[in-house]
Length: 451
Ligand SMILES: Nc1ncnc2c1ncn2[C@@H]1O[C@H](COP(=O)(O)OP(=O)(O)OP(=O)(O)O)[C@@H](O)[C@H]1O
Ligand SMILES: [Mg+2]
Image (cartoon, rainbow, N blue to C red; front, side):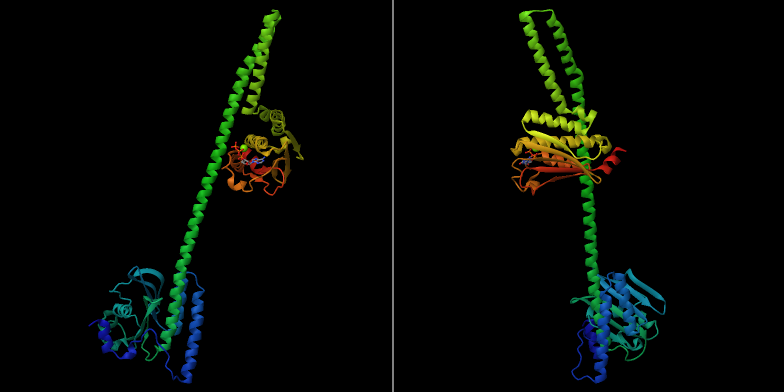
């Protein structure tokens, strides 16, 4: 015979109360009033528990309400977690002990709580009332009960949905008839609310944790993005320096040698006549063309004018070069209200903007079908703007931004390099005619980088 059935046979039915206790059909007026008061109390109390969002606060409030409602001197909330029973709250007014949210596994040899009663309620899953432990029969063999002054005990299961999630243990000095059915009912409501609130807290905590993790991942992605941007900017500048070295070498050695050879040929031509002179002249022309070609190549490799005279001078040269080579008209419209030197753009910014405008102008030649491009420069607040607009067929594919980088490398690379300078690139996608790209660079970031 199990202990539960054994006890159910040996104790009067009033000791054991089923979880779903119903009101009887014919209740007296006072009883009804008391029930109404109890229900109001239970609802208010449950609402006040529901407001709490931290497990500790939920338990604190539950204990305070239980003590107020049941007048208990000892209260314990034990919860089943991971197949073990944990004492989550324990208050003993006589011993002046208060432990909320403690992590103590319930021990059958506990000197603070009667293991026999707690284990019984956990198994039977129904409330147990002992109005006087001195007359508790079976439970009297529990050393906790045997070694203590007589007390009244109410121990009831805590349900999470339909599963038994723990027990509430209450104890006070013997006052017969104090533990009523209504009280058990109210406590049942409070425990139900507390368990639901604690479950919610777990969900909130899990959500919070997930949010924090997402933030961490986002931060990491941002850091990687920033590193990639910085590296790509550094790579671009290394390439630029390399180009400049090659351009300098070409200028200082090859072009100079060719120029000296032209001078030598000129001298040679003075001492010879007719056929030989003609051949020397042809050689001279060829060498001059080579010098011209190498100069142009040197310029494309690295625009010396940019380093010597600044961005606007370099853009003017570029406009002429593109007009001459590709047959489109390129105008520079300078709306800057201050001289270029006061802009104080650093070398990286200058070269990046120059390369961006060059790519945009080459795009005009390749894709626009137009014959005019305008390069405009202006300032607005702390931003330096530069735009390239043409009179061509414009943006044929309205989803260019999505396609950027897939069609070609030019626009994507401009964007990457400008963003590495904390700037922005905008394509005017609403434009009805022509193609227009505007770049802006914050000037304070630029001067910070220089210092
Ligand atoms: N001025 C323009 N007018 C019309 N369409 C343009 C213009 N500039 C760019 N585009 C469109 O945008 C696309 C992307 O340009 P992007 O410079 O990125 O690549 P690309 O010029 O095709 O190749 P790459 O620059 O790598 O040599 C082009 O293929 C073209 O369809
Ligand atoms: Mg391009």
